Image 1: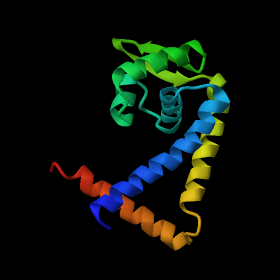
Image 2 (image 1 turned 180 degrees about the horizontal axis):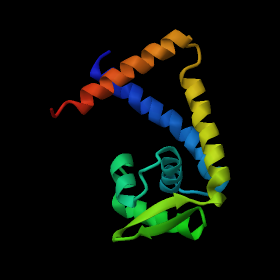
Image 3 (image 1 turned 60 degrees about the vertical axis):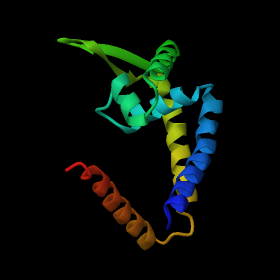
Length: 143
């Protein structure tokens, strides 16, 4: 696989995932950033500040801030300052976000099923093994 083929694959996967994300956005009248934030918080316990979301999802801080404010107003998020830390607002999903998360996870699962249709269990395991090896190479690049 050439690097051009690799990047074509990445872009194609992103385009296809966008169609699944669009269903969630439409169903619950959410922006792309709002959708990404809700699903990020649902799928990444322990990462609960706007700065962490912006860094991990590579969303500009200004967009994260606007989306967080909208989600707070919609009742999907709550924000709390922890004792001794008045600088970072820690975000958590509310019960109102439950249907959004369930539908979002269903869309993510459907996307995964589409990606891996016609794969054997052995091929899925091999893909996971190779993916982990690539991720490890990236993580250790600076060492």
